[in-house]
Amino acid sequence: MTVFAFDRDHTVDVSPHPEHRTVPLSWVTHLARETDHEVWAHGNQRLVEEASIPGIQELIRRRDGEWYDRIGGRADEYHEEWPSRRERLRMIEDVVPDADDYVAVDDADLSDVSGWTHYFAWDFVDAVEAGRIDLDLPP
Image (cartoon, rainbow, N blue to C red; front, top):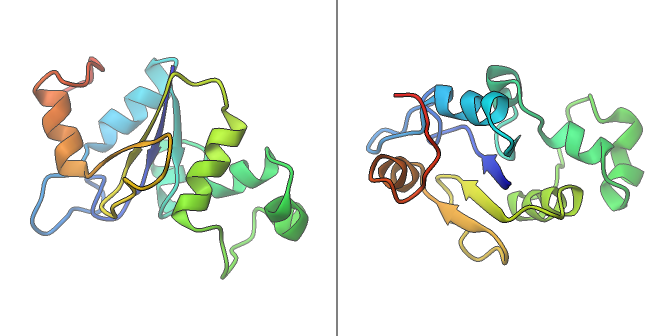
């Protein structure tokens, strides 16, 4: 099982990048609903509703620690200060520790996050279409 963490803005086609291809929302929802993979929204939380996937609030609820202590009881509220993207990826890894792979798809470079494979959206789309990532996604 692979854990996928998707950003939204300039990454998924509901918020297109001005110069590059983005991941179709149908791919995100397919991965979440039709496979055994875990799929999370780690960036803009509008993707939680658009793709019906868990996001930061669910992550905070499912994890003990500093962030739960700070806002756990108010996790459904908007907060000015959320964990950084890199912290969110580490938190996802803590919540889903037994995955075979961890993949972050984001227009921001997250290649420095240990244990995660980062793809820019356009590189992820190219890799899927070229068969370098075998996910059997809808067109």
